[in-house]
Length: 120
Image 1 (tube, rainbow, N blue to C red):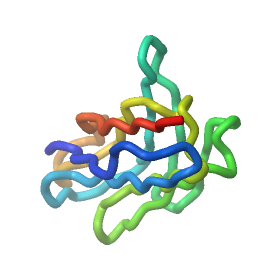
Image 2: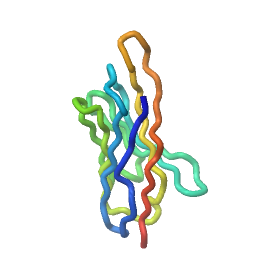
Image 3: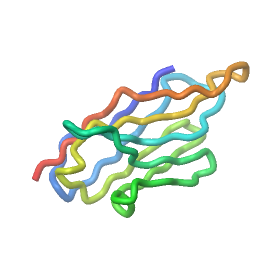
Image 4: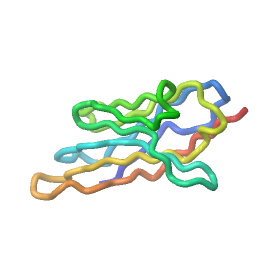
């Protein structure tokens, strides 16, 4: 199973983007899903998390501009980003705890990263 992320790109400051991420194949169950980012020269940073019931957690500085959501039927997690600023420029990685089949336990999976570049 691979997590496939999409939706990154180049946007001007003040613009919006929506990222999507889903497993490459149908799986038995997905619990927590989330987004992290890594800006050039910086450490990984949590962006947002969402559990299977829809409860969310955000990095405090991003609350109000970023919204995480999921479609459980599609196994997809989204990150809607508004009022993007140059400091939001980073590679964005999705993460999910996936149980591939009923006979295996949950395992942590990471997407390949999608690049978001915000120009001033």
